Length: 467
Image (cartoon, rainbow, N blue to C red):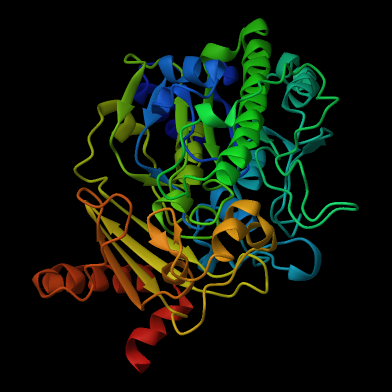
């Protein structure tokens, strides 16, 4: 017990706070579903996200934050364990016949915090298993597409006079794409959850397709713009839920005493984003508000990934993070020291069980190496992304048609190694893996990738040796 309070004291000193009320250790982890860094605070002047922008103005905006796998269940398992999914065993989707789950021996964030005296609460999308590993004290009800109502359902937890701090895991189902066919239509006409009757407490923001900013990896087509307009609308709905939740925190007098982290499980649900380890799939919004921060409204260039979330939140709570594979960025965020925060790694195995396509990534400074372990196979598609009008509009035009800045054929058929200079080629089009001048860079990143795999007990490290 004494060591626990020593850790708490150290965490409080780090933030210039005194060891006082437990409320100073409240944590809100707000995770959206399939959202890229699309917000005013990230430079998008069209999308309406006033509440996220306000949170960024009162906190820190991470400009180089990444998931480790662009698949919902697998990514959430990393967020809640601080372990890469090849190490925690949650290789892909939990639901339905996919039936993937974490190893029983894993110690998750909510379980660790509960044992340390936190009230652990979840609401919205869960999508991990087994429940015994990812156990929360309380599961609140709430429609994941109705974030304002979700926030209202959290009021009792926020207003409670319980002296224990709370950990609130708030997960929307927006802006996830719901794909497949529906009765009377070839494809769901409202794939991003928008509906005529709206949602309680939400004032829907309607976007005109011609006004939008199209991601560079997406095709500049009317079909894509029409889908993006629905995606933007769903993101604005999330923003209103965030605003309502922050209002409740402020009304209860605990906002300034609460660590708030806003992120997404991975990037946008369009081909080129979700399920890939290109930048469109890996890069996520990441906004942090913390108690007693002296410098607010700034951006940081430290490079972090979701594997760092659990060790960071445990650090803030004064709880031992032994067994995790990431590290705490609390001190680095405060000092904005990024010399030692200039590389991240990624590990993807499944999305759906029919989408086995293991990939590993080493991102070091400006260079990024993707190892497509199953490169002999055509790239598999998530059912909703395959059916998406944006993809079908280009796919039906043939393999030589362009989807964004690469051809349909290049998207489907990938080489063993992809090496990109992200400073000169942010779109990841010019593969340098076979360019002689970059042979040394390629060799260096290969060694770093293998070392990462050995350190994190990746089964696929064997392939370096038996080939």
